[in-house]
Length: 97
Image (cartoon, rainbow, N blue to C red; front, top):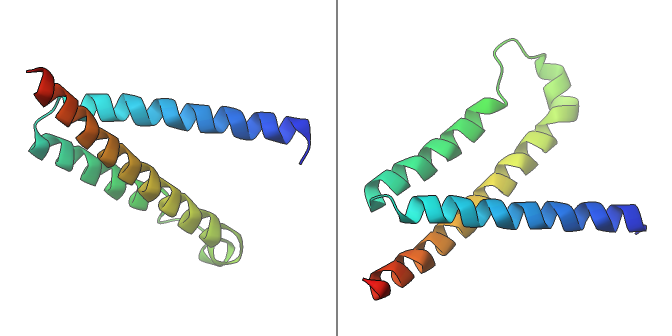
């Protein structure tokens, strides 16, 4: 892998980590019910965001379907990490109280 690709992966990883921490901190300061609704809404929006009613279905089947499935899996893994980090932050907050 060349240096440019390594740099790109490193930057993407750093950005994902920062997003995870930001989302987790925000969710940790919500009620559990509100945080659960927010996570659920993010998952639902991700599922709907790639399904345009006027999309050429043959193109989606040939080229886009795998990308959409990969994006959904990535989002789900990301949100699971956010939920785990949110729990950690909630525990830290409760110990400080």
